[in-house]
Amino acid sequence: MTSSFSEKELNEPTKIDLSVSIASWNTKDYLRDCLTSLFFHTKKIKFEVIVVDNASKDGSAEMVKEEFPQVKLIVNKENLGFSGAHNISSRIAEGKYFLILNSDTFINENSFAKMVEFLEENSKVAACAPQMLNPDLTIQPNRFHLLTPFEAFLSITNLYNYNWDYKYLEFDGNYDVEMLGGACIMIQHSVFTKIGGFDEKFLIYNEEHDLAIRIRKTGLRLHYFPLAKVCHHVGGSTKKKDSMEMMIQAYRSNMHYYKKNFSPPTFLILKTTYFFIFMAMFIRNFIYQFLFTNDRKDYIQKNRSILQTFK
Image 1 (cartoon, rainbow, N blue to C red):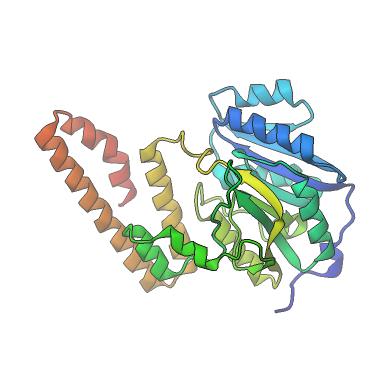
Image 2: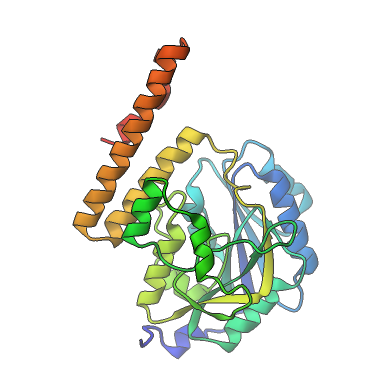
């Protein structure tokens, strides 16, 4: 496939090699470790770090101001989500390459310089991702293939076994992939800008799937680059979210992705399945509340926002 980008667009000169973009929401301790490791281990490249704080209440923004004055800090008055935060960061980023990095990650080596060097040598690769490790340095599964309609159905019905993703992994391989996990992606900044950045209707989940589809349409490639390694506390950046809020956001993101990237009949099947699965769960929980507790009204009130989401 031919690229829709000219050589000039892909090789525009810039004084900064890399802009590191970190979206943070109530992850102060993880964020501190992330920034500490980043500044300690990143060598041989010119880089800037941009932290976009999504209205944290744990003192994250104050910590960055006091301990990392070299960081460009943007403090949002409300939580604009993963996509919105990184799009804001991209608009002020000056680097040739743009690193989308979770606040719950850290590095033990000069990983980002290796990724910059790889992209410099491979201009037809739009973006690459490192090998992700657990904090104990064991290899962390990472999804490299796009979600199919059947896999979406299995996921909704809780039948999808995420260990199946292992079959797509060659942990020490160095190869092109369909998509890259969102915890750490380095992309040519000009490409990210030209395709319009992240779709901000994805507050959380599926934004990297959608980004991969739009990148691949340009004719450029996505690459897994295991010579660079990044450690990741899985769920560290989302575990403080309210479970009800997470359910609503996941549903909205899933529906937007299915509608945008699957056929209308497939979207209707998945939406209907989602609805019946949720209603079965809601009724089951309500019966439990009715038989064994006295907080039935409270249960309905708490779930009212979810019920309204399915309208």
